[in-house]
Amino acid sequence: MTDGRDDGLDELVTVLVPARNEEATLGACLDSILGQTYRDLQVVVVDGASTDGTRDVVLAYEEDDDRVELVLNDRANIPSSLNLGLDAAKGTWLVRVDAHSEIPPGYVERAITRLRDREWGGVGGRKTGRGQTRQGRAIAAALGSRFGVGNSLYHYGTEEQETDHVPFGSYPVDVLRGLGGWNETLLANEDYEFDLRLRKAGYRLLFDPELSIDWKSRQTLSALFSQYHRYGRSKFPVARLHPGSLRARHLAPPALVLYLAAAGVAGLRKPARGAAMVAPYAGAIVAAAAFAGRRLPPAERAVLPLAFGSMHIAWGLGFWRGVAEGSVGVRGSRSDA
Image 1: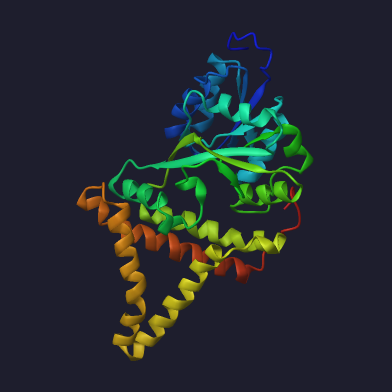
Image 2: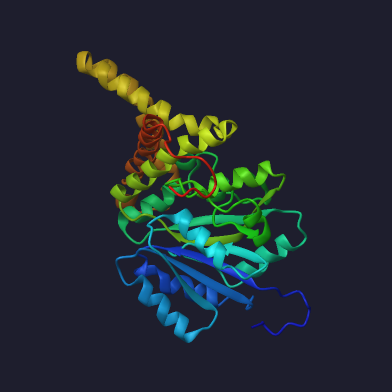
């Protein structure tokens, strides 16, 4: 299929969608993909052992549009789903879109235009969180705040620039295969770890804020806590594989956890001292919440300090859990583990 242009530049693009229990959001995601201005698509949805109606959603789209293909994965593991999708890819280029996301009509066309000159080994853009509940809207605001996410450019960046990591990246398929795909031993951060290997191999990554993706962020504080605990837990295995990848911003949440633990111990004997130790961080999250939530109604703005605290503390606790576990089994890019 083509979009009718006669410029001779169209090449098949594989859009890869890993999905697990995404029945509620997958239809809107696929509609946004199939509505792209770039029509020469292979849409590979990899179902990672879903227990809801995710597979039925894909089958219905597959029946109506021959560009859609379902691949089954009996493992509930994102990097293994990505690798199965890569194995099935027939395109020259691969664009990753997660199943709880939606992309604007020109997304694929712009991504491929940036990749074609081979100046960039990968491109990606801004990930904008969308909330659908009171807590969800506060969480989305926290994710768009530098106080919440540190130097994660893709959450708030507005200027095109070279970067160290892109979410939902787009890459040449031959580059992905040449680097062995994604590391299946990681619980999370498989995309960050891949981008580390990509840059070590001499490729460059482009952040283009015009590549904007709407992403349904977590809608409850408990879900946000679990997500960031998983992120932190996987950071230490990545650091073991790539010792030079740790930055000060990565160490801030683990240090905060230790500091708050020390404050708790001090507070057992001298409550005033413990409160004085906690006060600077408490003041910082209140101030950050007032700024990040200035456009939110009061009830949602009140949730923001809890969202910031959940992100920081969960990430820090997860990091220390990863340290304790010793990253057993992390060996390469496509382990049998």
